[in-house]
Length: 365
Image (cartoon, rainbow, N blue to C red; front, side, top):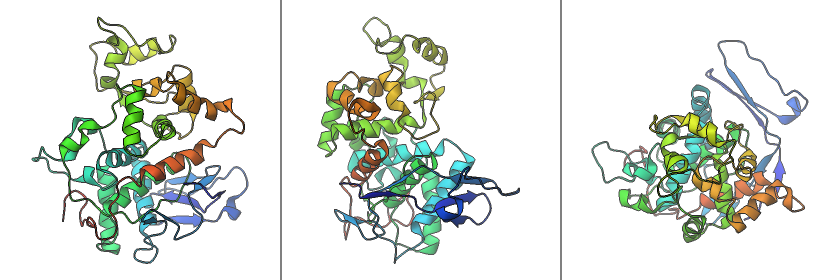
């Protein structure tokens, strides 16, 4: 998988009004890229520096997926998903990180088949009930996008594709790269809690994480890049308790934590305190999608254990350092992240006659 080129696409102007605008880059290609709408419209203008595209051509296919799969059957599909994601992000700034995490949690278990979306409060056997999915959110955004798509193109767009598209838009809305998403996934017909029992865990060694990623066809580089998705979002003190207070038998903190950072973490997450208190995964850049988290990991400022361990392993440390200037030319973090997201998005997908197109994402047909 290679990125063929980088371009500036149309700029997106979104508001909370009933309509939204598309402006060509030629009309706004001068600083400071500002636009103003008077109330009651709330305007969001997104102008990332570059947009990374997996392919510039409609119809470019990856495995059995295809960029622009819905261009004839539901031409507004991607636009509708983007609108719903933007509306949700306008209301809740934590939604982009939640949608990015939702895509990962869907793909890393049974593949990108929407199995995590199946919900029934009385059914403990469903995948979503796994403790490894604790705190995963964004389901309501997917459900709203699906409802709008069903109204416009009944029985055409899969829930699995909506999740993949929403994750891409979440990255873009956080000022990260824009990339084309190959679509054509179908929804799975299985959702089992036991399937999520072997997901990568933040307490596992890098060797174990590498092995789990390799089993899915993902590389060490993918491990670093997909972990770097933690550049946006937060975590709970629950996931820091052992690292801060019980890292060794008999107590103690993880010695890899920067000694100037450790008191701050303990202040936010005191021993015996509220385990639900949240703190940023990438201090200093938690709302912007960038490679700042790699600098934090190198400096001992990684918040969760799995992120921090990436710099203790020789091979993953070399990958991190490469993006921070240890090699020439310096590889493009945005481009490589986009490639990893597309690669993850192809894991064990259902296409053709396999699976189904759910009418409602939370239940099988």
